[in-house]
Length: 255
Image 1: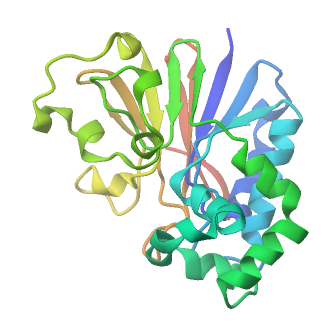
Image 2: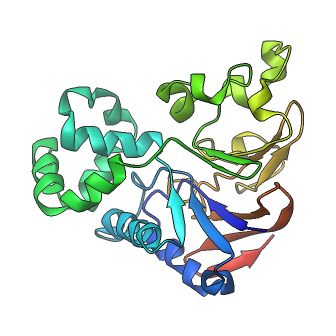
């Protein structure tokens, strides 16, 4: 039975990400790595860490060891390269951090840099799917409207949804769509410190009401107050938990 290690919301934290190579599972053909999006827009990064992050994930995917989906922040940088007229919302969501990390001062420079120097990376990034289904597991960046089938979800929902997915009971959800019954959902997007009380970091959070859901956004470098954690969740393809860990620049640690 295939086993999957899930991680999401890297936000350019290449110094932590590269510790994936320390996992013995990286040499196990039965274990696949799956990335849940948001590879850019981090705080306090080393120069060119964003491109290093994208290349690391791209190389793993092209080797057959990993798969990846797109996140809402990744769509910002794709728009910067291909659809600059759609970039307004990025201004308040990490654009300055990405420009700074690439040593640039304006969006015009960014578009030129992306298309002429990082064309392969941008083409790969915009080719990524919105979801990955493996056995009974469903990976999506932000979540879904649980009352609608997976194929009925629009891109904005899959990349941006929060309360309707996180707190379906607040919205008086009557019934979960058949697409999710008996499944395990894995999402990033929302730093989990916002979902639980009594933590000064972002743990892996599981909720079992309506459908089995894991929230794995460890914060990483996504904001100045986070601790640089990338959460790692290992499940089998039936959604059974195998282990939970996290990575920082110092290495990999057990929860």
